[in-house]
Amino acid sequence: MQSPRPSFRHARYATKVSCQVVRERDFRLVADRVVDLSPSGALVGPADPVLTGERVIVSFPGIDGEWVDAEAVVARVVHGRRRGEYTRTLGLSFEALDAESKRALRSFLTTRIPKAPGQRSRPRRAADCRA
Image 1 (cartoon, rainbow, N blue to C red):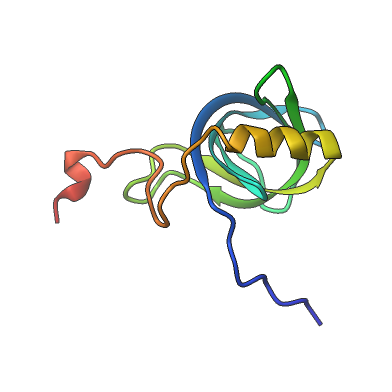
Image 2: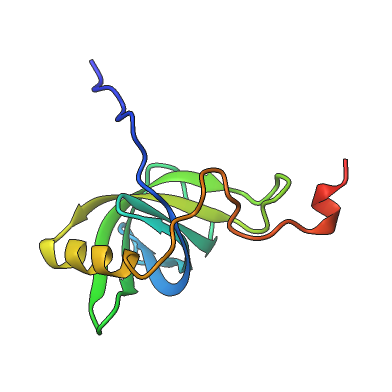
């Protein structure tokens, strides 16, 4: 029997920071920018084609010269085909963060403002607002 999903979601924080996301199986770079971030995962892009469930390694600079390094799984692939999507992005779920990376991530997130639920990562274009 599967354990039930948690009934809460962590706040997401809009950010644009360079990163390196590499596939674990071949160490190929698949994304290089964090679009938004939470304590439990990240949205990264632009992204090369990757399958849901693939394991990746994420690394990005925090503050004060600290780095956040995490093992993650691709939880969602956004293909950029729907209204309001602009490019392929990957939703990552962090699996393993060491104590230093957790501290660096918490410290980094304190410098960001949380996004409102349902808020887009980018502003709508006029063409997207027409019915």
